Image (cartoon, rainbow, N blue to C red; front, top):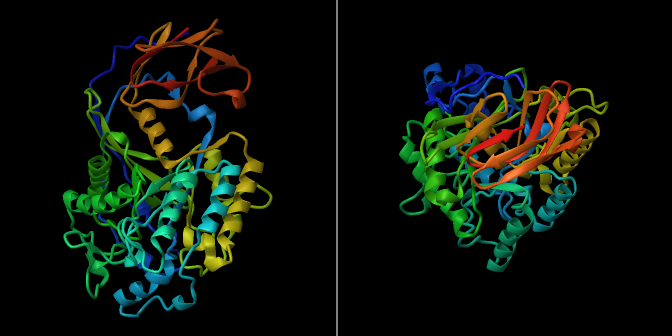
Amino acid sequence: MQLTNRSAMLKPTRVFYPVNFMSLRLSRRTLLERGLAATAATPLLSSQQLLAQPAGDRPSQDDQVTVLNPRMRVPLSFIIDDSTCLVNLNRFAIPQFAQAWKNERYHHDWQSMPLEIPDDFVREFGNWCGEHKVRGKYSIVPYPACVGRVDRVLPGWTNRQLQASIKLVQELMMPNWDIHPEMVTHTIVVDTRTGHPYRNPGPEQMENWRWADGKSVDQLAEYMTYALRILKNVGLPCEGITTPGGFANRVLPELSLATLQSVSDVFGSQVEIPHYFRHVISSGDESVVPRVENVSGLDGDDPRCVVSIIACTGDWTGGWDCSSRGDVDKFITADLQSGRMVEVIERGEPAIMLCHWTGIYFNGEKVGLRVFQEAVRRIHKRFQQIEWLKLSEISRYWAARELTSITANQTAVRFDAPFACPTFTVRLKASQPKGLSLNSADQKQALRRVRQPSQLKAGCWLQQGDQLVACFDLPRGTSQLTF
């Protein structure tokens, strides 16, 4: 093996992300491309604001050791927004949106929309995704459109119905889906001192629009903590949050820190790596890999970071308001040769699809569900080396990928990892070794050789010409890959 000698982990360096102004200007919700008010709520941001988002500390990594995707597979995920227990958010949110905009917008026939998205549909969706190994993020709006709190009462449904709906999320969805609050109501801002929504709100008192303008990290964190505690009260742990509409468009650096603060305050050591979903880049060549932000403490006992997850598609299922019947070809065409998912998967970057639960159900027609199912079928037919992951799993992998110090000599590669990570996968130049083993303070594990990338899993290695690929469960702390 021909690698240069390096010393142990160097003092972390401080870096900043080079943020592309245009991509974040259209970040969230770019998916509302039809000119509705949420796009109007996406403000112009100053380049000074955007460049203020710190990535934080970074360790040294030997440039002859490359961290690959987990198991040499491209991560996929599916983000579901606007979901909650029982309540069909559109039916109750749209008249509140219209009121906030003094009936200048939102002329939907909301009264014809069903009150409920039933648990039978959640069961149908969750079972289908389980059969096809689809994983992702599922929002639970804690106080949906001010109808009622999921930890207290939902007027219009019995307590027994509410408890059964929460149990269904716990048992069916949580194993394969991260649960996020999408702030408190997704509509009118709640006064956290009283628990009451603001009276006669305009855009300045709506979560989707201007309320977050000028708010500090502590103010945002207090509001997000309020949402997280409601879900904690009903046994729905969260490793991240989703922003509703244009929430925090003008305070992006504060949003990142507030996510770290609020998730840590509510769930403590249960969550090592908080994450948030806010940004969408649905076209173009700009990278959609997660951003690992506000990193600190890599040389101590309390490493910290927060991960920003980026969706790579618009909502091409049924739209948030069911005004479009979707377009599966935008995800992947019938000949399997083009579409946004093809572009991103072929780049080897996490390909994260986006939808709204209201459009998946589509007022009972299930239009969005059928679009999504066909997209998944086509993706699975076109690609083999892919793997569906939850957002928290992608976040953990990217944090380990960027924050693990890697040094090497002629016989070993040393890893100093602030976070443990399953199926950590690396490539390095090496002649035919007789064997590989992973050594740490707790164990010594011999890795098994496999012949094909499709066979690669934790505890295995693969020879490709003069390069070696090893896959293993990376422990926190110091470990060595020896050969």
